[in-house]
Amino acid sequence: MPLINVIPGDKIPTAPFNVRLPVCRVPGWLLALWWLLRGLTRLTVLAVRYWWLTAPTVAAAWIRVRYGWPTLGAVVLVLTAVGVAWWRLHPSSWWRFGCYPLVGRWRRLWVYRRRWSSVMATCGLAMAFAGERYVPQLLAVRCDRFGDRVTVRMLPGQIPDDWGQAAERLAYAFRLRDGRAASAGRPDRVVLHFNRRDPLAATVAPLPVPEVPDLTGLALGVQEDGQLYQLRLAGSHVLIAGATNSGKGSVIWSLLRSLAGGIRSGLVEVWAFDPKGGMELAAGVPLFARFAYDDPDSMAGVLEEAVKRMRQRAARLRGVTRQHVPTADEPLLVLVVDELAALTAYITDRKVRDRIRESLGLLLSQGRAVGVHVIAALQDPRKDVLPFRDLFPTRIGLRMTEPEQADMVLGDGARDRGAVCDRIPETAPGVGYVVLDGRREPVRVRFSYLTDDDIRHLGREHRRLTPDTDESEVTR
Ligand SMILES: Nc1ncnc2c1ncn2[C@@H]1O[C@H](COP(=O)(O)OP(=O)(O)OP(=O)(O)O)[C@@H](O)[C@H]1O
Image (cartoon, rainbow, N blue to C red; front, side, top):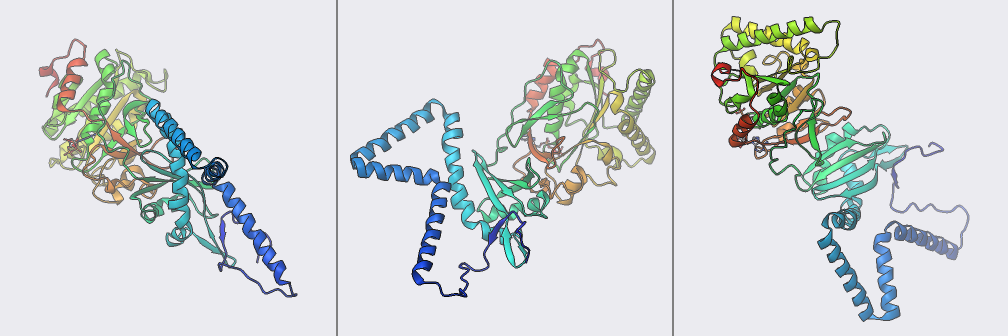
């Protein structure tokens, strides 16, 4: 038995009452006094810990004894009126500072505290050491409109990934459906996110188009915590993976919309490839400098032109700068490919396929520094379908059909850390997971959705202003 208990968890006594028979005779009254004192101390601790319950109860009892029922009724009435007035006049502060803190305390006591030890044991998060049992400590519960954020102090030896794997079981144990774990500011803590309602249930309307696109943060959608999701295109290529109808088109169009200001001014040049016959991208033709579809041979030719342009640019910039800065003379070149696998795997003509693969490999490995970026969507992320998966620094995982596909797209262990792409319902197109800089756990995002009218309107409002803009010329 160690001399000092070094485990910072809640210790569970092996039996409800640890009564040890005294070696010497202790008088019965002393024993009774001892138990009474212990009971009183425990009661005081509970009264202080749950002051938000005990303080109003004591105050109500005192008013009732001192002034009688009518006064107590009047005080309750006034407090209710103040609450209602606050709610009507300033609902956001009422929810934030009045309601949710109280609901959080109540849920901590009633939902979590009550079942904590048993749930920790049944979900495999409790441990035994030196004959004693320990459970992780429940530190705080915060509520908002969508669910609970539960902060826990982990036991030594546990990491947030252990909690990520158990998160769904924990959610069900606490009678909720959706759970995931995220690391907290301190290394001994983990935050469990349990949702009652999905914050991303509603479709996200198209976001405003900035005059000058910020390539370090293009706003494409909304994150689960309500913040805008901003994608860093500078120095990156983007891979969008998802099953059919998962909303890949909405990611592409959100991206094109955020770039539209630059397309109009000539800072950004988009070359679009739509191997599925032009169905997906045709509505935005006025935005594109090149639009290749249908014929694999011509698409291979356009890709080779892009490689040529990249090489010329690299030769010009060599020794001048290490990162290209877009100008109207030398714009950012963005290659958008809908269904990349149709170029890399499904083409039967081997020669054409090899030409395409070679060009793509060169663009992906050498394009970033010289302002040539590839944005590609695909359904099947397996390596034999997309050999250059690892050359895409930014990856987006939408709804997928197999659990292991999340790891293929977002990196090993992504699913255990919460990217459950296979669990995204078919009723939530445009919802996906992304990995943000400096965040271990993938973040759930909903991308904005542009209808065909929105796309046509975008094309009209932000069509390229350079003199060569002519749909018949740019469409191949
Ligand atoms: N972000 C979104 N928000 C709401 N609904 C969306 C969103 N994205 C797509 N949808 C809906 O889902 C349907 C399919 O979307 P989309 O065509 O973008 O999927 P996809 O993954 O590109 O499919 P495919 O692989 O067949 O081309 C759309 O017609 C639209 O109704």
